Length: 406
Image 1 (cartoon, rainbow, N blue to C red):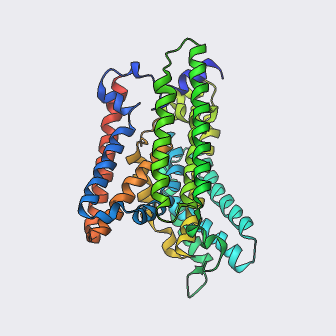
Image 2 (image 1 turned 120 degrees about the vertical axis):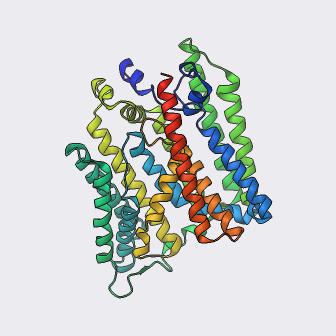
């Protein structure tokens, strides 16, 4: 990779690429390298409170249900991360997911297509919607906020046209992807997957450590290899023990973790990921460094549409149908909240794919816990709205501190 591109691109990668020496204060450090710590502390406090209020909160059955509840939000939040990192937003993800799910369900149920083919076509539709929006935003320089909001309304109308008149429902009862939420991995397979993850992490950590040593850069075996590998091993064993105490690791949860691991690698170890962060940090500087800003913007919107479609298809499988409620904006708000709470900046240039998981866990834990303590609907909405507002305020505050320290 050309040195000038790497310099521009790595300037704003938060946790993986930022140099702590660039931060002059502890607050600025929180805004970059340790952005995940406040989220994990908040999650621990939330879990502690609900465990105190209702011991069933930490039961294996409830934790398994909680993990399934956050899959859709996590997938959509992962997709939103790509546009948020480049400083844009997509308000059509819920409608994109609903239309993609309607296409998939219509092909599988009404037209007799093979389920795999139907799902692939549904994903293509979501990616195409994202690509079209990215093209409009890029070449017409239209505000993404308005373009995606208008597209959302159009897609909601298309969804109503696609649904059967009268019932307004495509039932997925008995369909293969209607059963996917009830598939759990055997304990032996889960253990093999965890071992594969630990070995892969150890290999990549060693390669990074060796590269730093070769280039005479500061490198620590303890913090670079031993601590990450040991942490993942311990946390993985605890998670497997909890899941196996109930019915095993849900296939959807394992798939979400696999996607997060894959895109964590892509966004931190490949040129594509570096270019995304570079554009979010300073689009003009990225352009001058030779990065194709236009194509990267379209690619980001395409990925967001693709993940929105995946989230919509999974959601339809969980509720066994596609209806007008599939385009409910609650999913959009929860996904944006999850990404922001997890640490993805609304101002671009900061955030990691793991934000989708931690943010979704925070939102899901609050929702799940308040149901267990019989909180009213209005109280749940008030608390969730307050959490999102506080997260945005914290994001703005940390962003100012982070910019001031440069």
